[in-house]
Length: 178
Image (cartoon, rainbow, N blue to C red; front, side, top):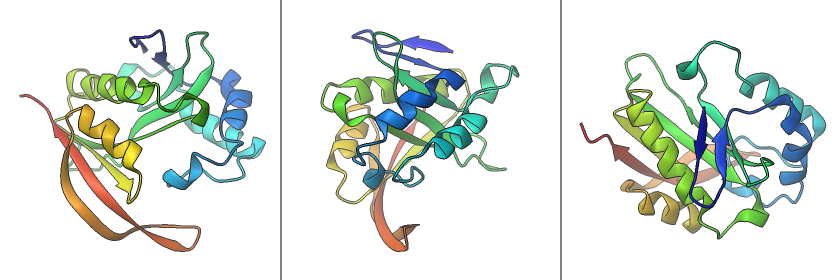
């Protein structure tokens, strides 16, 4: 997959060559407080483990559910994907995403979320996409609202546990125009 976004960024598959960019993008510790699964400090071992999962095998378009966000030069600057698809809910997926802090505030994530939601509906046949965000992550809430996601649950108490602490979240959803 290769989606070109307005402004020249692209969304592609992850590559093993993204290793150094992953480590550099997650070194400042600013992304991790708003994400569930990205550890801090982010080490070479974490990057290797992630790329072993995220780099697609040659199994076809619909098998890959995680993609790299790239800047105009092709450098990896973030990630986005669908998670938690379960039997009986193969029409639905949860979206997760992150962007390196030096790229925040440029509209890149809004463009990316919209493009991947459209891809999910049109190419993967999804009927429902959700995104749960930590309470207080107003930037992510704005991204989802700009992309047509509706707030379905304003407070999900103790939805997650990270680093031994419970985290409250809100749930947004977007439904396919079918």
